[in-house]
Image (cartoon, rainbow over the protein chains, first blue to last red):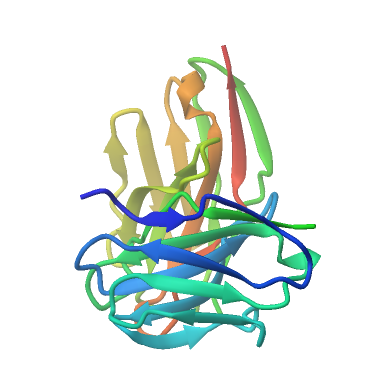
Length: 114
Length: 115
């Protein structure tokens, strides 16, 4: 078991471009979370999935953000028309079971919008 | 709504000193979980411990210990005989299983252990 895997690790993009990140959770983990972390802050919740169903979305997740988990395995997070304020570390985590127990995090994707 | 406060932004200690990281939480739910995570310079959040609201027993794991006090809504983390490898940002987090609320994190405490 290799843990939660995120790709890419780093992404630099020009303002206005679209970007997509991928997360592969730990095998058989039902829940998958996306968080965003800016410098000096704790992770902020964006959205989560129970299998393929997206159950909750934060107000932080504007219309430019969309997440999918089509087969209940890996997930993608897309940001359209990126803005400089989107620059952050995007963290993915997964957890087993049905409740919000401990989540295991990947190493994150650091996005820089220039 | 749930909230986690870590009042200490940064702490510096000399190696072998003991250090306590404070965490205060807020929730109206009677069933909840509390967590501590470590984020080393590599960036990956590492799970350290989970406690549920019905278990106020303190826990010790090697040099790490946790003090959970419902009366003061605190879940403090102590590192005994700190080492340079303990240098990291430590996050306290809270979750409420009854609803759709996932982990809510504090802003973290940056610990620097100086040799």
